[in-house]
Every structure is written in structure tokens, then in C-alpha cells.
Image (cartoon, rainbow, N blue to C red; front, side, top):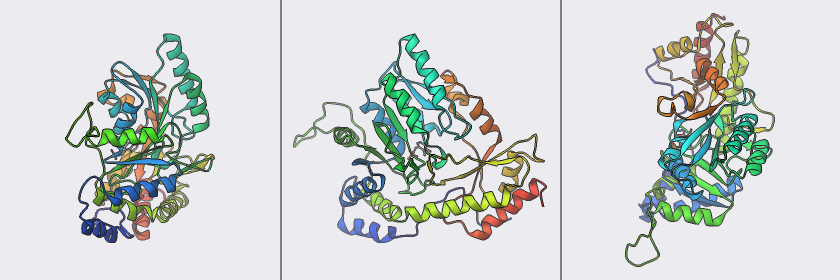
Length: 378
Ligand SMILES: Cc1ncc(COP(=O)(O)O)c(C=O)c1O
């Protein structure tokens, strides 16, 4: 067994992070505002082409604020991709609203625009239009925004793009996070760039971002004393962590290129394994290749995805089943879902493989060898 564990997507600190963190330290801006926060926001705006950004303590905080800013409240319904991490849906419940989940399109693994249209037709018939839609860009690949935005515009439903996993990906040449009314990014420790924990809310609407900053700093009124006319949150990003984010962002293209290379090597060395498939790459854009994901059809393969996961675990290598869809989560069992069979099957058969940009080539070779052995393919 290998003593050094290989993780799915560990942090890869390979740039000016240390230098910029030291700069923040020496400037004595050891708080949730400061020059590094301002600079990180500007850097993200430049990278995504979205003019305004608020750096926050997490992607979850960004989603929560986005929903508040859209006026989501008790009794509302909010549509959400079912194939995602629970952080996409949890903030809906923080607002007292009910999530309604939409299944994925098998050709992209992202939200199915046709099911979305069906759900909106049905909502209209019932006389209750959802307050918002949260669309997730799964595993670093954008959803199909043209039909999604078209149908949402028809029904007057504002869109939040949960691009937590997709910084650097594009859809028809435009950056992930730039679609819909607001975009959400995450810099969690497992993301393509990390600040250890952190997130960003981005928008082309200045007022929205100004209001997000206000709410994220405890909603302090403009007064010399501490005065509050509404409930606020402690959601801003620390100046030290923003420095780390700037160092990481400078190498984003390098990290994407390395993850793409890892994805290409997996495909090249494993596409002959019977029953094995990879997450489809949609023709409409370029992913950031955050994680390489496979599916294993138990009817065609000599092994299951669980056999593979356990064999890797035995060698101290982390892999994980694909997201368990929200409509199958005990906590959301009372929520409505449109469709569900596509992501149900993906969850049953899918696995995320180690994909970190710092992964060594011989570690990847070893992973492939273990998988080929489990699958009985020499
Ligand atoms: C799709 C998705 N949305 C939201 C989040 C939440 O981001 P954070 O961990 O920064 O709160 C994550 C990841 O953590 C995610 O994968």
C-alpha cells in the first residue's frame, strides 16, 4: 500500500501565493477587507469578463446572498439542478423556500432544458411561478445556457449560475459565471483554485454587488456608531485568503491545461475497458476539467464502480461516487422533482477519479493499472 495518500483534488500551491500572503501579513490588513480583497475581486472580474464581484467566505454564502437579493422568501419555490453538491440547494431552505429539482440531460450531465420547460409549464398551470433557478455547471462543464435562459426569460424566472466547480470553463466563448443575473464561484480546498475556503458573487449589476457587500458585512448602516436596519451576515473573505486566491488565479490556465492532460490520459488508457464511459464533453464549450468522471455499466463490465473504488482505497487512493442527486437525499425527500432517472443511474454507476493538477504522471499510471486489473483487462 502506498503510504502517501492520493486525493481526488488536493490544493496545488505552485505560484506567488506565499509572496502575496506575506504582503498581506506585512500590510497588517488582517481582516475581512483590504487591498488583497479588492485586487482579488478585480482579478476575477478581469478573468470572467463580469464587471462586478464581491469576495465572500464561501460559495454557499454567495448562493445564500444571491437568493436574498432576488427576494426569495418563505413559501417560495426555487428550481435547482438535482445533480449537484448539497450546497447548491441548502441556501434555498435558509430562505424558508422549497427546492424543486430538475434532472440532467444524459448528453451533458447538466440540467435538462426540456425538463425545465415542462416544469415551468406545469408551474404556470398551477399559478405558482418559481422565484429563481439555480443552474449548476457540473464537474467543470457549463450547462446549456441558450435554451435555459430563453425559457426562463419566457416565464420571468431569474437565473443564478452555480459555477462553483467551473471557474475557467466557457460556454460558446463566454466565461462560466457570466450567465444569468448572478454567478457564484467557490475557492474551497478541493476546487480548481483555492483560498482554503472562499467564494465570490459576480454580476453585471453594480447595485446587486454593492448590496451583497453590505449584507455580507453585517448590514451596517452608514453611521459613525454601529447601526443596523436589517439583518446582516458575516460573509466577507479575509484579506489573507484573498492574497492566496490571487496567487492561485495567476496559474489558472496552467491548472486547467494540466487537468485536461490528466483527463486525456485517462481516456486514452481506459477507453477500451468494456462498459466504461467518461463524462461527455459538450460541443458548446470548453470545460475546466475539474474532475475526470467515469461510469461503469455493470451489465457490460466484469466489475462495478464500487469494486474500482474499493480497490483504489486499498491502495490509499481516494475516489468518490458521483454526486448523489438531491432528490434522492433523505433531507430533501419531500421535495418535488422533474425526471430523476438520468442522475439516479449516474449516481449508481459513476465515479470521480483523482484529478488534481499536482498529480504525478506515475501516480496516474498506477491508478490506471489498478483499474484495468479490477476490470480484468490486461
Ligand atoms: C456545485 C457546488 N455548489 C456550491 C458549492 C459550495 O461552495 P463552498 O464550499 O465554497 O461553500 C460547491 C462546493 O463546495 C459545489 O460543488
